[in-house]
Figure 1 (cartoon, helix red, strand yellow):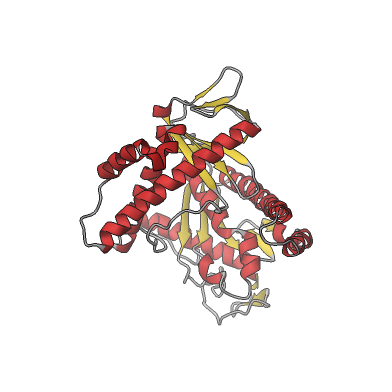
Figure 2 (cartoon, one colour):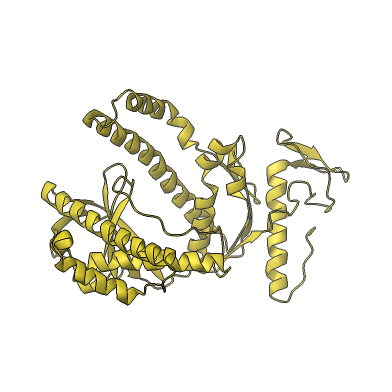
Length: 382
């Protein structure tokens, strides 16, 4: 299994200039190759292959107009072409139905004003971690790294990323073995919500931290300060970085909290079942800010990835399954329940907590789907 290990790096002022030059060169190579393919498409010419683009890059480095491309590692430039190739591959796979998920659009030109800039070094570039713990990059130098843990194996590539807040990160791709956890008898269904982030079928309730709501006052103040600055001024650039850092703090805190909660759930349960929510659709309603603040998609993705690595079972229950309206005791499906109805009584006399009942139904539906897939039979009203 391939995993990414991200670490904060602290380049010197001179190294930041070299990184900025590398970001710019990779962006120019990407845009030149995209422009060449778009020009050929409009002219009705054959699709330009990767070999032809690589040859054109070699010739461009010899020309006076693009001679400065030789100032950075050639691997960085070749990876720019590889990124374009991947973008086209994803686009073609999406429009032909071979790629699942949201429809992917055609590649777009990159801008120097993009919030995220990145370059990638592969083994061919001979990057290395020095005995002193620094990351040595070709034509950039040894960059200081804040190591939080050891790499499990030799990395196959490293991506240097600069985010909107001006922070630099090194993202290593390493090959690791799965680490299955001891088998357990516990299984759990999870009902995700807004007021309460998650209710587990065993009765555990995880309250919603609402990180964005807590930081709204600080964010509002930073945005107001940014709006007062003159466009194009240095003070506006400084204010923009402050806004980006405020948002990055919220995002980092939410991600760290989601990692801890998902790790706890995977560690304590052999099988985890969640409802397949349409997060994108819910994000278009009046609850959009709360939905984005909850981070359901990120949380379920973490559950799925960690379950695969730890030998646990993870699956999603159909979004149209009436988990809220169905009685988890007798199996009768009642009328739709508005959001303000937090408890209801079934015709069999059972009083249900809305979220706990939904979690138990999700667990039963997940078990049914799992056992039926293995050739067994099970009843949802068990």
